[in-house]
Length: 287
Length: 352
Image (cartoon, rainbow over all chains, first blue to last red; front, side, top):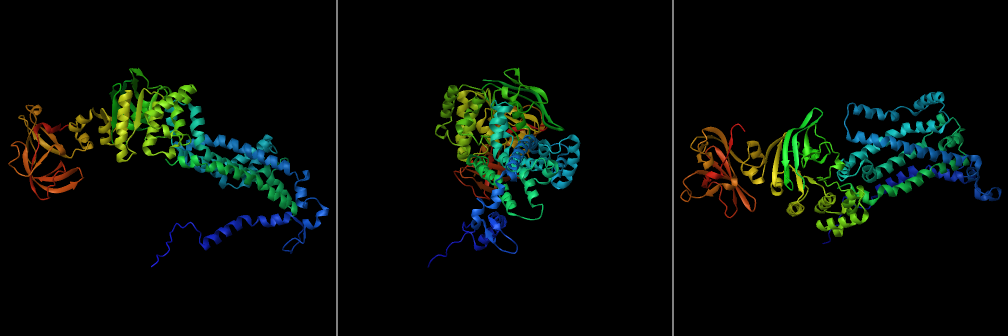
């Protein structure tokens, strides 16, 4: 008699239900991009056609590139300026945010002080208060201080929603680190700077990279605060995009900009993913 | 070679007092255990000696020099943490060389001393591995090597055998013992396990609730504890109240015991007698027993441990535990006679 084929609960093959679920999941994430891609390559796409009535390919002799891309890649779109601004602001915000949050997270993870729960609640306030309220309040203050429409103003504004996330992530990382490693380094003769450089930072790196990535992405996606405080003088990718679609129509160039706006985030994710997964770290902490 | 002294050391954490008042002297080259239940302040004591904590009062002396306020980096001590605290992002080699690297030791010298110490701990073939790829015993040897390479004046260890399995325990115990004897380095370790303390240390300092309760060699501590609390902590089972008279007789509820010559003529008093379970002889007939200190009982329970066997013998109202090598097995319900030699009985005065 043949034995029944063993089925284990931890089967590595997916059931049909799981496959359908995954497909749906991917569909929800990637689906919205499909009309954008089609739109960006359309020559004429009028309602109620399901697909463009005229593709760019059929009208090649009239323009070198698809209309959308021709505009997006030209200086008139201000794409380059917006991209540089976005990346620059994102980087500066990330660095400042790290500098503020590393020491703060260390204290929150290791020390106990009076009013700590209240302080932690206070830290998450920017996530609770509507962005518009913060933005308008800041704008009133910044106009007086002469910070409205300046990079400094925007950077300070971006720190408000990013700090709570960063502190939370780094606190968790510090809690996992334990004092032993730093104390051991001190006993072995390392001074504060050596402890930080040789022990604490390398061990914190996966968490720091994750936090920095998150901060950068949040900063590059902030629209409302940038819009209020940039006062049209400083444009970033989200504000540029908003000005394109504010009229209520989604034309080919808006579609092109939208696609480009997603690029920095995707590149960054691919670069840092290797960092976060690094084998030596992943294994080393458990013991 | 460093002598370590603690003089009237006290440590408060806010309103909580971890150490009330401890005086302790550790001779140069000695291996001392700080033993106590968890929360007794033994780890705090170790951390103060290492410099990770500063005592609230009192002073810590290395070779008669006050080091209480010397920062941990300059104190030149070594500490092996319970969970070893190996840096997970560094190879064995880098972990071990860490102490020399941060001191700015020249590279050729680092290389030389690294080779030397890796040979001592027999980890040469593992030098390029990461901590995650090592077994518990190997991790501990790396931690010890990392500490010893800096030539510390005092070596400290937090629960050195606690995380190892039984077989490895014996191996590491012999390793630590041999290394310590060879280098002659003053060594202090903390443990909550009286077996670990006795198997490793020259002298054991028992700490209860922030006080030094007894400081003695392992055999003295085991056979002649100075309080019932210590006797209990050291695993003594047969502790009974007794009335001792001037002629050196102890009257217990089940028999009258003749005591050793030291106890004769000290006046009558109340005391506790300790009958160590392994010094009691268990006899099957009354004839073969000596006349003194023999009393009858019935075996009521038996616990078999392989090499040894424990019997519970009921004598009158009391239950006495007897430990024997398991050369024979006595049945439950058997009538037996117990005998104990007078000089093996230990008395603890009532007040203690």
